[in-house]
Length: 169
Image (cartoon, rainbow, N blue to C red; front, side):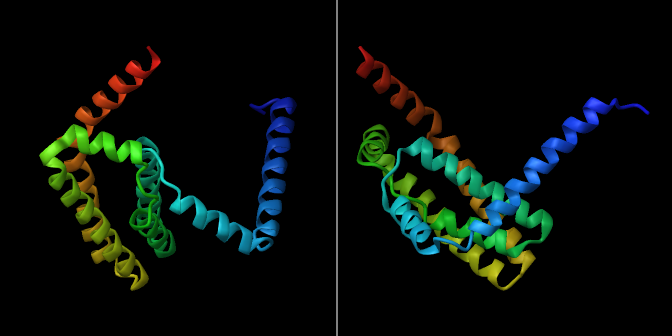
């Protein structure tokens, strides 16, 4: 046999631990639903920094992508809803973006509207289990994100890092 007994025992141990954690998670999922919803609502309404929101949106895109590949319309709907309902920008991040982009802020806003409006359409397509519409809207969201990043990401990142360095001094 290619594997020794220690490898098999270690693998089995971690498999059992993982299975136990999964069972515990699903058993506790029904408990404290109201407090979880309150916490989720609070976190959605609490403003966050731009990099944090962007990471959350990236995770939501991964969720949609997984839903597409597994044809899990609930995952697609969840990811689209999260994109559409992400937390607002913090005042500091909003100021950073506005001051950095100046008059080009309207273009940034246009990209944002496309992504949010299309995420809402994607959610509807997922609810109707229409994969062709899901793909159409997913590609539009992805194009909106990439276009906005190509236009502004480097400039905003540079200014954010410049401000952080200035504040350290």
